[in-house]
Image (cartoon, rainbow, N blue to C red; front, side):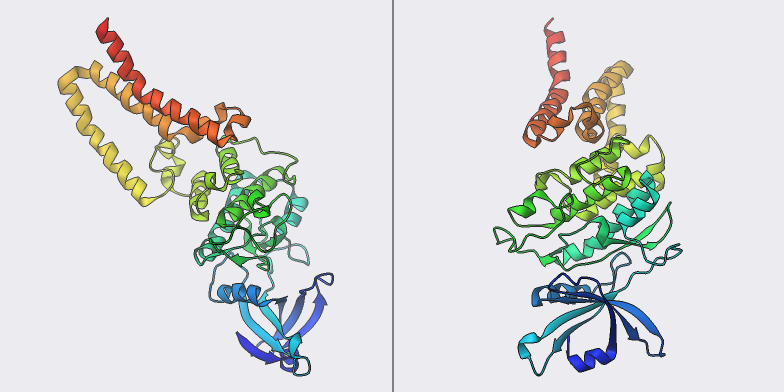
Length: 374
C-alpha cells in the first residue's frame, strides 16, 4: 500500500465518471498514463481500511477469472487529515468480440441473449468457482456474488469467459464471531444464514447455485426453478440448500461436479464409466480407493466361482455388491424420485437415505436366512 497526496494522485489518474454518486464510498472510471505515453481505463474504488485489506490481498493474486487489482493507495490530505482515503485501482474489464460499446455484465448478457445453453451456464459457474478458490483459501468470502458482479470478458454465446468484480462487500472470515457486523448481499442471491449468523464460503456457493438457475431459466431467483437435466438440478439444489452444512464444502468440490457434467475428461464422455462411483468427483484418493476396490473384485469373483459356481457368483455380485453400490453411492441420481419437499427436509431425507442403505445391505442376508430356515 502506497501513501500519496491528493495532488500526486490527481496527476497519476484522471477521473472522468462517478459510477456511484449516491453511495458514501465512490467508484470511478479513470484514465492512467502508461510508460509509453498511451492511456488506459481503470476503476478506482474508495473504501475503508477493512476493505483496503481485502484489496491488498487481491493485489497479491493473479487469476484469469478475477478483475486485477493493480495498486492500493492511502490518499492523504495535508489540510484535512481526517479526510484521508483508501483507494484501490482495479481492472476495467473489456470484452473480446463484444458487439456493444460497453462491456456486458452477466445479467445484461442473459437479458440480451435469453437463457443460456447448459454447457455455457456450467462453464461460467466453473469459472466463478475457480476464480474464488484461492480467495477463499486465504480466508476471505465475497458475499455479493450476483450476475451484475460477473463481467463477460469474452463475448461468445457458446463459451463466454468471465471475470468477477466488486469485492467491496468481501470480508475476512472470523469463525469466533456470532454474526457479521454488517449484512451484505443482494436479495435472491444472498444466503439465508448471512442475515442472522456468520457468513462463510458456503454463502458464495449458495450464490453460485442461484446464478446457475438464473442463467438456465432467464428468471430471477424465486420466480422459476430449472427442471431440465436432473444432474444439474441436483447441483442447484445442493448448492442452494438452506442449511450451509449440506452444501458443497468448497468451491473446488462444486467445480469438480460442474466439470463432470461438462464432460471435459475422456472418462466423463463414456456413458457407463462416467457414472461409476469413485471416478465422478475427480478426486485422487477416491479414484485410488475405487481402483483398488474394483481390482479386488476380480479375486472375489474367482473365489466365488470356485466355491459357489456361476450361479453363486451372480447371486453374490448382484445382491451383495452391485445393488448396494448403486443405492449407496449413486443416491445423487436417485434423488429425482423423491418429492421436492422431502429432498429439502435435510433431517427427514437423511433418515430415509440411511434406512434405504441399511435395508439394501441387510435385505439379502435376511432373505438368505429365511430361505435357509424353510
